[in-house]
Length: 192
Ligand SMILES: [Zn+2]
Image 1 (cartoon, rainbow, N blue to C red):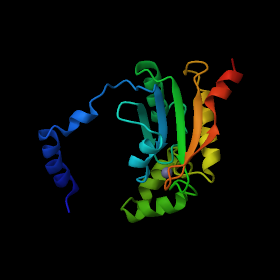
Image 2 (cartoon, protein in one colour; image 1 turned 180 degrees about the vertical axis):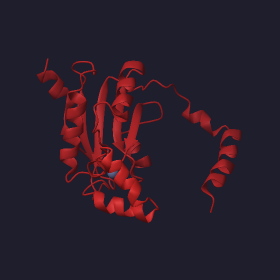
Image 3 (cartoon, rainbow, N blue to C red; image 1 turned 90 degrees about the vertical axis):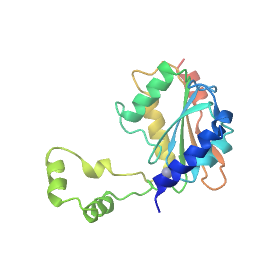
Image 4 (cartoon, helix red, strand yellow; image 1 turned 120 degrees about the vertical axis):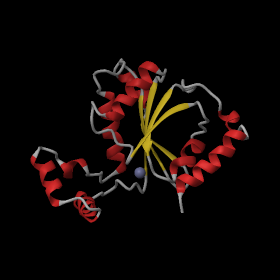
């Protein structure tokens, strides 16, 4: 099976039949939101449907676990660009139950890297040069704690506009049910 070939063939028809027309919108999020969520396959269609989001409604940033770990990493930069350049006014972190990052064991991941052909020398070189591989590959024990931690990192970011609401939610990857963990409006009101 060749995924790319299949995609290219389908795509030709998609464009030819002008199927894109129903998705035409602007790059500015209509609901003025930027969402950070997980790359989980179950959320591809379910998450936007469960939140009633359509094309053009929100910026969606995805990674493994919906985790923001670095104040000056790639995810945080995307959030800042969404806010300052693309009109987002609030941030929503959406973790989910049954996430692959729950209880992720870095030793197991490193073992899989060995099996994938990465050499012991490479691992040692990286470790010796100060790369904390194990910490880098660690997931979280509890999705609620993780969402709260990510919300905290965003909330305390020195470059974010003061009083930007930062919300934290958890979605059920089967039913789409949302639980509100952090109400960003309340937190923003408290700091005013
Ligand atoms: Zn996940």
